[in-house]
Image (cartoon, rainbow, N blue to C red):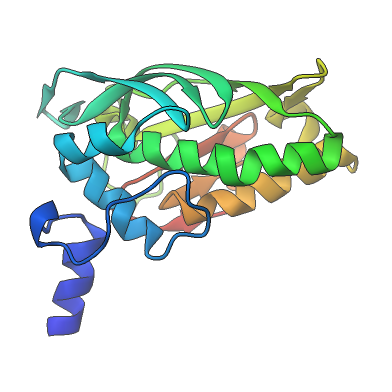
Length: 221
């Protein structure tokens, strides 16, 4: 029981940061130990969020809280203009998701783009973060509100490379060329930083984007 309780405390980032035995997250360190738990800690502390979300890994500005009401709002969120060396303009997103996307971009997306295409990603296209809504196409066992309702999710739809090449989840996921390989590999690696990482093979509602969130459930497909 004690082990289970400790697992829940660390996974949900409930433990106050000053009591945590884990070192503060460093976005520049690849393959960090207990990265999921350490990202969760960032989400629970505004001070830690501001200390961790720093350039050059990410350009983020803290925004005021919008207390959660009827399942919608946010507590600890930022505005992003760049992440992992690429332009990524996001109005409101949780500190947890911001930390996850910065690490995913820097340690997985950029190296794979360089390996497969010989060019870096310069911008990321997305389909939104905060939206006060329920799950779209939700399964009956899931609660009603989407993680988007608390700014704890990001939908990624495509990438633009320095050489001008454009890669789209909708157009390229089902192909057999380098674009499909790139999309499938970076999507698989996103599971390290996000609790839910689902894409076109999950259902038809996700045929044109990757959905990444830091909620309580775990699902990678």
